[in-house]
Image (cartoon, rainbow, N blue to C red; front, side, top):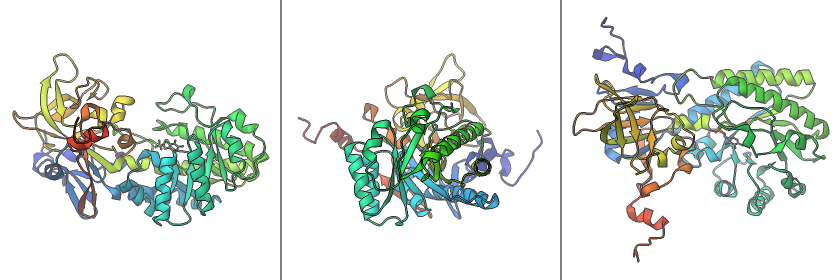
Length: 468
Ligand SMILES: *Cc1c(COP(=O)(O)O)cnc(C)c1O
């Protein structure tokens, strides 16, 4: 083998950064690197963090959040849409709404707001947080809040309260029974339509129960303050074609509805933009945003209608890459007959902390955070620390390449892109503590969620200290 020496490879003759699919913008790994000691690093401007150091200092399991990634991604996305609208002569406005359900943690929401995100909420409890932020003047007064999800009385009352206080809050009609209750609503209203097309996602169209059917929507009698036509096709849409097909269908419904509701001026295309979790070729936001604006302009010009204002609610896309989960191996067991040769058992739980591994067989980019330049590799599967045989990560039955672990030693494991959905879905099976959570920003690392003590966990289950 030729001894090729490049800038990044150092003496060992192999580009480990490339080998572990790091440093690639299209994979969202552009900030990651490998130290000369073979440890996983990440750079924020001129600050650098080493995951092995963080794990040593704060222990494992560990979640590390990088707000700079959230800010960077949102700034880019808003920039793309505004730039393409200018380039194509698009007359509508662009609004980004962050869907709170994707990650409601403060360390995610505040950076998003500071970069100009509007919000989309799904429940009265999420809206309650928005109310508190509003009262604390944590965001600009022009912020707009969309309210999805089934509207309980508590939820509707809170929406009404915030509207009366001057917030631009827009309930989205979710089902026929909400129409009557919202007829009296004095602010703008939106309507969610369950598009009659199949999107290329994990979720089966047959079971979609959200929004009005196209038929119900089109036979709606006139509501004078109906402004927004909204659809959401599902998460982690696999192809660009699906996104654009949805746009075409959504626009058709938009123009039909506009004939009876001239107040309609905004098309909300929901979420669903995917993440290249598996670090394989994937569509990009830059290219898709260009296609969306161009297509929408052409369709509107052809139909002879004003260019709609455009709302995008891509949640996972913005936040998933901003968090890394770190586990440490605690033991190893051979697997006699499988693609993988050994179980690496870690000190956290896939089933608890990364629920989608279990729920929808989510794949992740799982890489070592130490010994990344090891010459001895092993094909492994991972098992979590609960006593549940479903608590595992097997890369769909294939295998994960990891360094061999010398007797008596351990290995740090990094799971990338864990910032979307996992936290609110997490649980405490076997009463394991969730990972300790830290935020790294401007070179400063802060604990934002402590490791739960046995007493803290016990309390959730009614053990209030005396254990009687
Ligand atoms: C869940 C959801 C989103 C976010 O979906 P992503 O796949 O995370 O982009 C956006 N809008 C609505 C209405 C949703 O329910």
